[in-house]
Image (tube, rainbow, N blue to C red; front, side):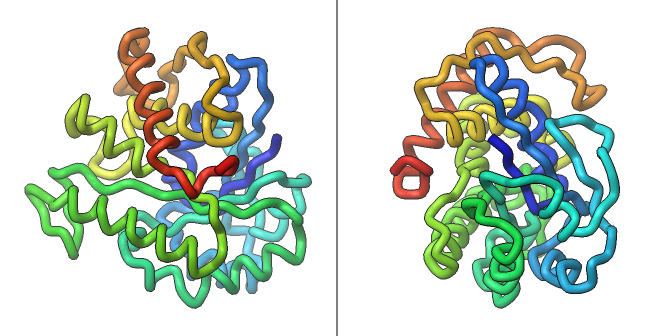
Length: 255
């Protein structure tokens, strides 16, 4: 299975462990990210028009890009089974921000692939971070979370993409158990965040019945990690990921 994410650092976050988690279950997922930091939908569409080689191209969670390329070069790099789209995090709570560029971008991408399109739902910021709409210290995390859920529901229906990967839902559930520790800097994911969203993506594409209990995150993604994540914590993260998929009913591949 080959997945291409047209995104930014949030796509890098969630893709860190997807390949390794699938591998632990004897499955094969190659996940690539067309990355520009903080890149919104409208900029992706603009770059599709210009052909600028502005993207770092990542594979399977490796911290070193395999090349710099244009969006079109990324599309032509392989035959993709799935392609994901996401809005930049600060605008993910606003359905209007996806338009008019998202359907235009989808139309352009469709010219070069028969891959199935999906939306990647992002997550709200940590409470000690800030957002112009939701304030700061503390930021209204719950309001941002609810608005993200609503936005992706609206966008999914408007662009006729019925598949939404619920990363943001998993982060919400994980915070309810572990506290506000899923971000390393207020908005990017910590090791816990990367692990639980990795489980979400693996379950989303491979099904809830796969056995990924042998997976252990290597902790190489950030220096903050001083040791392995405990097995009991990993079990809880798997439960959270499965719950996020179940509660995402109507937006899953097999619904």
